[in-house]
Length: 273
Image (cartoon, rainbow, N blue to C red; front, side):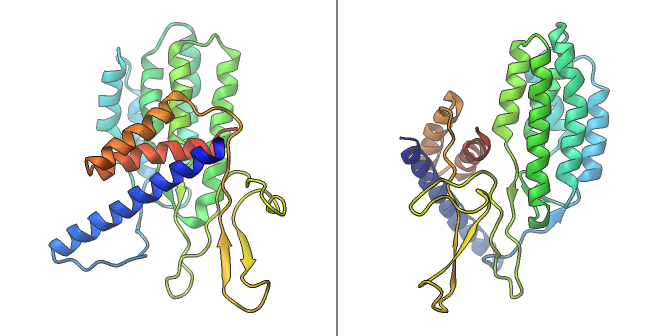
């Protein structure tokens, strides 16, 4: 049952990505711009912007609701970052942990202004990181998540604390941009999470990608195999709802909305126990 759900999600995810590529190519051609397939996206300089944003968050004291918090955070962080420079994701997670830790403890005492902001900020982490920063970024996410869950266990849980943890789970670790080999050919990507045991056993190490020589080492090109990870816990209601919403968005040709919903589900699949 879980394997079928994962395959269905990945099929829908692939469809949305393909549709996005077609729409993007059509727009670029309509504007007279050349379309370059497989070209890497330039990294943005994000670390300094994150530092300034968290400094502003610390100064916000009067935030009575989540609606106000989302408005404040949106104004402070601005548009979502694309691919950030190496180290920027770690900087974001360090700052987020420093901000969310006291917010959780304050919420346990009935003071929720800071945790409203922390909930709204969970989705501001960089969505993608360069290949050389991939492992470090995934580790940073997992360590931050573990630390916040540990703090939540130490205090009396409130609905706001639970909402923060759920928001952090939805954000998930970043996607890792493929490294570019000489000649512009994408290299195999690191994929977080253990591989699924299949015929012949689980891939060595349980993570990443495996390289299988085609034809049993006959000199044919190497085939890159990406393992699929099946969580051992039930899929949460928000993720199931997101899949249905993504399907409806694709029917309406709203590729951007579908992509965002499926990204959130895939991040949960890659990090759930």
